[in-house]
Image (cartoon, rainbow over the protein chains, first blue to last red):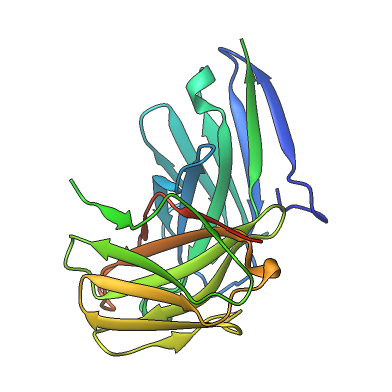
Length: 114
Length: 115
């Protein structure tokens, strides 16, 4: 979810378990959403995206769910691995608007215990 | 393989120095962005550019300027570095156009320390 103060929310899971990371987005007009993964010392990397005409999209071991009614996005990671340890954050965009400016959430830190 | 590169991974400068951060993308993207990232504050947009020689202020432009003389290169300039500009700086690029969904591709980041 969204961070409070200076500390990132942290999700700690056991290796092999499923992880669910949540994000509340801000703009009801947003119609495109992205999840990024950022490992320590690296730039963010694209994981998966979803358009507002969908409520679910699956990738390899990841699923994104979109609930437009409550402006909520979630990222599910199946069979979490140590390499999944990173900060995950969502981003939203308005289709055709603002020349591609994304609005980013503050992130959630995922920690995977071996 | 798409790539956004930044000139330095780590940089240490002194207060008052002029600092240049360079970003190059090889994807022929029209849009380029500069962010800073601080713990607990997420990504904050400093400046962005839609095209060569075009620039727009983001959320926190104070103390920064940018230059886009070529499509592939977007430079961030700290006119007179201050300690509160110590941060991780991230460059990103994306395709332009209302028919495109605008995934941004990020560089590896430059960790700047101002003493």
